[in-house]
Length: 270
Image (cartoon, rainbow, N blue to C red):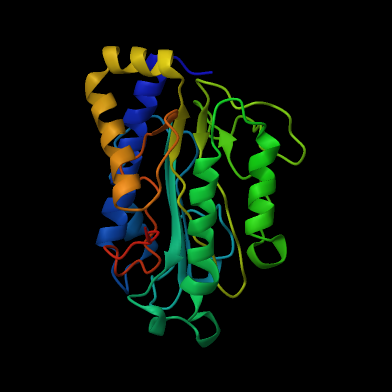
């Protein structure tokens, strides 16, 4: 359970890591070496919670790869993350401008894979409420993103602190109630040999009214950013949040399926 001071620090590291990912995604160019792309993250010595990863080319199916000299090629999958204490921002998609850049059997990537994932994650957020048994979120993901198509092996969401992966109340049959002060990774990892992956991995905190008041009073600038993110998710992405869900990342729930067209993002129709 995190204190207001810890949540404020994790908001800072989520914003910092999100800025790193944004610099990488907007700086992505066909023909780059993966080391060049990782350098755009601008790591500055803030303590890391796990090593940065970047998987593409021959290594795209291995999620924990760091840069190895792979060339960024159009039509290839790519995933990457930056993780500081209390934050891990990860995105996965295709080095592409549109579906026509994808292999023939993956050109329905959005319709068959990324869009269903986005819709399921919107429901995941709606169910991320204080007191809810973690097993209900596990079941929601199993029902909406069946394993035979989406291949989700790991817990669909877990706790984070200084270590990236602490534990998770979200597992099959879990009766553990979600609690105020928990800081979660929106870490639901699909995998397909056809469609590769997609991701909206950011950090969120759960906070009851008392914790929200303490956070707003002690850290008004962080609180203003949190409120702006909640408004963005509801008004732009079509994902209204329960009042206790505090998005900590500067790219909250943003999915750019085609990484060479980063301003094209998924959203739910109202």
